[in-house]
Every structure is written in structure tokens, then in C-alpha cells.
Length: 242
Image: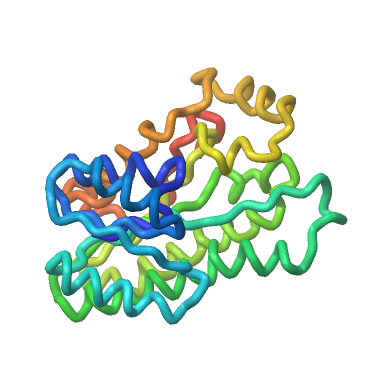
């Protein structure tokens, strides 16, 4: 299976959780040293570290080909790769901010899912694609994250469309929507007052650890979730309820 954004705050425990099930993991990210450290610490054998900038669409088919060759197949793609640029207000948002976030969070997500989906269709064994959105797809975001939120809203719609396209091939496509989880992405440039307000608004009363998100991803990749597709799974401690 392939896990992108594998060295991120949530990506790392997702890769670790998959490895703990006995799966071979292709960990994809931008930092070679962090990837090598991650792979070295995973349970089991046969894991692969791949450095790639997924905003470069030409990397996608090569990445899928490597998974087919070196992992022996591709049944699961979990795409966590994303970027967040917070601004104090919408007037501070630049065109570069927009392009940077949409190019990776939405555009690259679509084309990578399509590359993986094609390989799964050709293999004829079904498959699992798990995308990542955010509570902000519903709320519009906090702390100057309106552009990020827009890209993540696109991920939800994209996921539903891909689920319809790949359903006849027994390929499920679902999205995980975390609420607050301790990670660099959440905490970077976040106003402490906003952080406390989000925590207070969460019925469980605390910010999740990334490991608490990973189990949902493993479930969606398993046979137990075989009749779930096109869903957005809310993992927000009750911050959102839908």
C-alpha cells in the first residue's frame, strides 16, 4: 500500500498502523532523512521510502509503477499529502497561496487517485482509496485557513465522484475528516485563543493525538469496510456531528 504525506503528524502513525497489520508500506514524502527513519522503524519487512513532490504530476505514474513492481501490487492508496498556509485575513491571501494549496491538496490528489485507480482497475482485484479532508470542509475553517478549507471541500466532492466512477470495479473511495489533532499543520501560526476555543467546543474536551486518527484509516482499507464508499468519516471528537 501507498501512504503519501507519510512523515507528517498523521501520516506517520497511519504508516505505522498499516505496517502493524502486516502490510508492506510505500512511504511517500519530501524529506529523505525522515522517510528513511520512518521506514526503518516500521514493523515487518519490505517497506519502501520514496521521495516525491506530488505537485509534479509526472511523478504519479512512476510512483504507482514502483508500487506495482516493488510491493507486488497496489490495493490501497492513502493520500495525506497536503499543505496549509494561514493568513491573518482574506485580504492577505495571495495568488501563490491559492495555487500552492490547491495544486497539492486537490489537483495532485485527483491525478494521483486516478493513477492508482487505473492500476487497480487493470489488476481486477478491487481496491481501497482513502483521501483526507478536514473539519474545515464543513466549517469554512478557522485561523485564516479559508483557501485550505476550499481545497478540502473539493476533496470531499472529488471523493464522491471517484467513488461513483470506481464502484463498479469494487474499488471503494472514502475520505477521513479529522478535527483537531496535534500536528505541525494544526499548530503552525495558530492563535492560542483559537486553539483553546476549538478545544472547548469539542465535546470530548481535548485535542486528539494523531494515533487516534490512524485506526479509522486502517478500517476503511480493510474488508470490514467493503460496503462503504463515497463517505466522509468524521473523526473530530464531536466537534462536528453529521
